[in-house]
Amino acid sequence: MEKPPYATRMLAELIGTFGFLFIAFSGVAVSVLQPEAISSFGVAAAFGLGLAFMIFSFGQISGGHFNPAVTLGLVLGGQFPYREVLGYWAAQVLGAIAAVGTAIAIYSDEIETALVNTPGPGVANGEAFVLEAIATALFLIVISAVATDTRAPWSGVFAPAAIGGFLFIALAVIGPFSGGSLNPARSLAPALLANEFSELWIYLAAPLVGGVIGGLVFLFVRSNRVGGGSA
Image 1 (cartoon, rainbow, N blue to C red):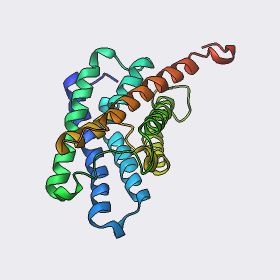
Image 2: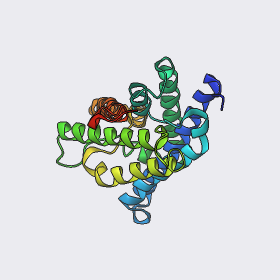
Image 3: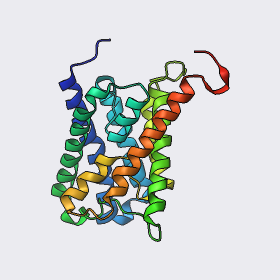
Image 4: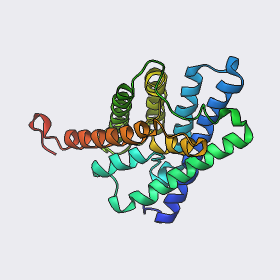
C-alpha cells in the first residue's frame, strides 16, 4: 500500500496525539475534581486505552507514534526515515499542547499543576530518570515487536491493544514512582502552560534515552546476531 503524503501523516500524528492525550488528561481531571470516581488504575487505563484507540484510528496512516521517543527509537531501529523526524516531533508537540489547553479550558485551571510530571513522593530525580528510561526502552521493544516485525504471527493485528496495554501497566506500576510519562511531548506541553520546568529535564531526556536503547536493542535482536541465527 502506498504511503500517504508526508503532510497527511503529520496531520494524523497531530490529531492522534491530541486525541490520545485529551482522553488521558481527562482521566487526570477526574482524579483531581472527582477523586472518588476514579483510581490510579483508572487514570492509567485512560492513557493506555486512549493510545490504543488512536493507533486503531490513525496507525495505518502515520504509524501511530504520538510520542517523540517512539519516533526516535524507530529511526534507530531502522523502521522510520530520519528525514521525517522533525515534522513528526512538531506534530506531536502541537497535538499535546492542544490537548492540554483544551483539557484546562473545559475542566478547570485546578488540573493545570496535576498534569505536570513529577517524581513520586520520596523518589529522587535520578531514580525517576532510570525508571522512565527503562520503561520507555521496554515500550519501544514492545512496539517494534508487534508493529514492525513481520516475522511475528501477531504483527500489526494486535499492535494497538499490545501497545496500549503496555502503557497501561507501565503507568500503573511504575508511574507512581517515576511520574509516568514515557513521552517527551506529554510532559513538555503541561510544563509550558504551567510555566513549571524544574524537573522537566527528566521527562525530556529519559524517554529519549530509553527510546534509543529500546530501538537499538530490538534492531540487534532482529538482526539474528544473537545465537548465530540467519536472517
